[in-house]
Amino acid sequence: MARPRKDQEGPTAVERMEEAFWEILAEKPYAQITVGEIAKRAQVNKNAFYYHFDGLGALAAQALDSICLLYTSPSPRDRQKSRMPSSA
Image (cartoon, helix red, strand yellow):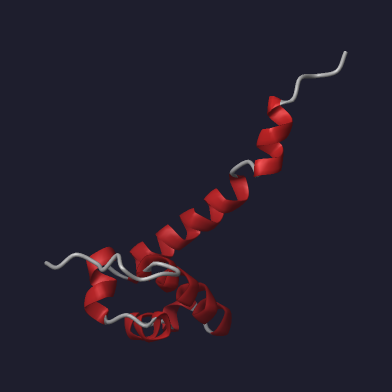
């Protein structure tokens, strides 16, 4: 199986598919979303989708994990505060 291209600037195919998933989910119920819709919106083909994911459920799980990580990771400002010496 061929590897994904790395010579493009901008979001990766996986990032585009995750974004497409959230956009489509805002428009319709999960049960009505198809891999074809995700691929078309993300500007990838179905082979690229299946290179990265076993199915729509795998994409949904990864997209949810990405969002949870984004909102549960400390921000750079929080990290900076934790390095500051406490004033006594």
